[in-house]
Image (cartoon, rainbow, N blue to C red; front, side, top):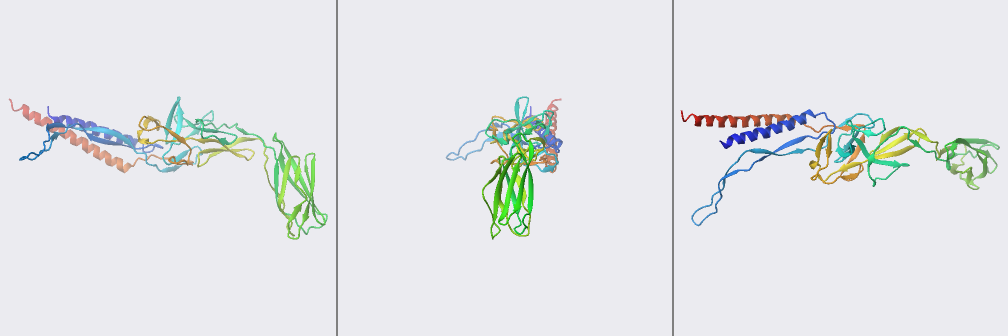
Length: 390
């Protein structure tokens, strides 16, 4: 039989594969995190009809004569170029700007994906649309150990941040040096004990001829000091003001004329708080906002990178698994070298270029037609051979 028949068949098969790959790319033009693939062709083994000979004394050398036996698909490579960003406004939608992958766990298998459309399930776990659980490091008292093993990221709505007893309070502003004696100013700040119980810390300032008398009351505890007025507006305290375990810092108080602006600028205690919402930081930290006003890190998202991402194997659901040629998985956080950064409220769209894919469709179609012509032409030649004998 004619070799051209089999060359034509191999061409049909190769261009059919190209059509399949191109069709899959076009079908996934709106799939978040999808990476387009391309088909690479390679000629097959050629049949040697005449070997090469070297030049002789009176005869020149000759080149080898070979007849090709067709084409085959050498490989289907994945293009991991960055896709465009689409803003969604959902706090749990995430986009990687860089070469990293999200790590998920499904059925005990570790998977990797660029699709960042996650949402909480009934257990508070962040999961992908197909049920893969997002992996990372959970925080303990707001501290993340990024060197430990990764696990499921869970955001429980019943998470509580413990109460913190007030140990210090700060006052800032001015006490008027020209206030008449006996002017009295009172400032009140809410403080907390170790159980989160709230009470008032009251501080009274009474004007004297030399400055101010300060009387602080915290429950049953009472403390008194004096502030001596200096000509340059500085108030010198007779000692530290500490009452009921709370140290009151008056170092920022001044004593200029005409302004009465002294106020409590802060205290470091808090009642127990329940998780109300959470946001995503650019470093992959999941930051919870609690009912007591405290913001605390709940977990940190793990990202993976590979020496050869093209060696990853597609596992469906916009996910990949590691192979022997992808290299070992290297875990890290957003911002680490070679991984990239995270953007919340956005998704990475497919990197399929429709203009290129439609061009590939034309090329594949014409290639398929040309190889079909090879077969029909070879068939006509065989028919002519058969008609030699009538």
